[in-house]
Length: 133
Image 1: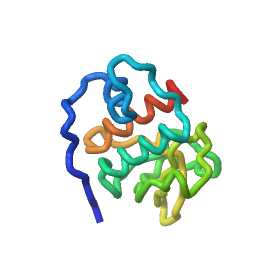
Image 2: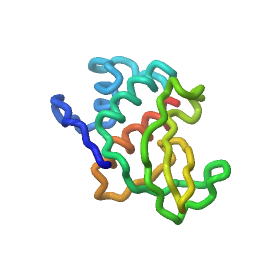
Image 3: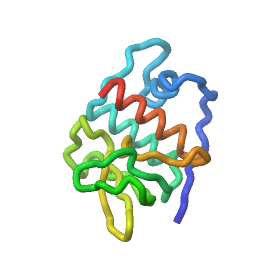
Image 4: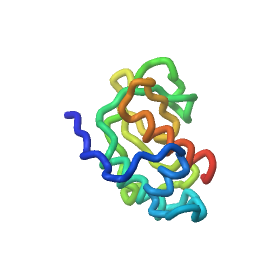
């Protein structure tokens, strides 16, 4: 079942850092929060409220036992941050299905098609993970 939360009432922001600061509750030019448990919780809440599930993507590169980067996968949901011991190195973990198998992998390692309504949200999250993780 697909779902999409109501759009944000915030003004559209052009820069990923501005959008990320707004998500994490940092005003103006305040320092960007590092990837830590509290910030991951805020990002998780934002993404679960704004991503459309399920959505199609592909792993951007081989991850642990998940070597198949050519077959599409369906991201079903995000795991609750408090239900697993989040390693800040991996950030948010999603549950997906690929080739009939349920898998779990880091959300920032998933590429989505250019026309995906989730693209901007996932690109911003990946940008934060790469630069402040």
